[in-house]
Image 1 (cartoon, rainbow, N blue to C red):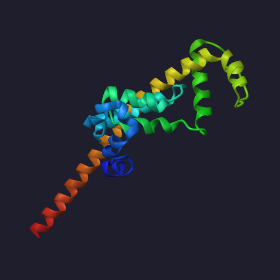
Image 2 (tube, one colour):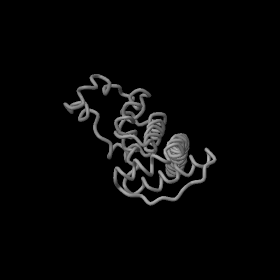
Image 3 (cartoon, rainbow, N blue to C red):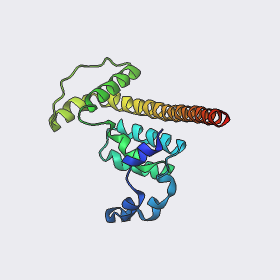
Amino acid sequence: MPKKWLKKYLPNPEQIRANKSLNVLGTLLHDANLWHLNRRSVAGAVAVGLFFCYIPIPLQMLQAAILAIILRVNLPISVSMVWVTNPFTIPPMFYIAYSVGALLLGVEPQSFQFEFSLNWIFTELGARWRPFLLGCLVMAGICSITGYFTTLWLWRLHLVQRIKERKLLHLSRKKESNA
C-alpha cells in the first residue's frame, strides 16, 4: 500500500490527541501502533472496519475505534472503513445479509418493500430478525477475513513491485556507470 498516499488523507495524531473531546480516552491515543502504517496495522484496521460495517448497531465508528485501540491497529483506517456502509450501500448489503441468514437457517427469504419508518422496522424487521442478524454476523466475518487477507496480499504485491523497480533502477545506473 502506498504509505505517502495514505498519510496524505489520514489525520495527524497530534491533532487527534489535542482534541479536547477525546480527553476521555486519556493516554490510550498515545499508543504509536494506532497511527503506524505497516502491513499488520493496516490489514487489522481494514478487518475491524469491515466487520463493524455489517453489524447493524448505532455508533459503529465508536465500536470500531474501541476495537482498534484494543487490538492496537490503525485507528483512522478502522473508523473510515466503517463508511463502506452508507445510504447507497446499506440496502443491498443488508439484503444480502438477510438472504445469507435465511439460507443458513433453511427459511425461505420473503420479499418486502423497504419503508423508512419505525413502524416498518418493528413490523417487517421484527418478523425477519433471526435470518437478518445471523446473515449480518456471517457477512461481517467473511468481509473482515477477506479484507484482512486482501490487504496483506495487496501490500505484498506493492512491495514486490517496488523491489522490481529498484532492481531495474540499480541495473540501469550500473549500466550507465560502466559505459
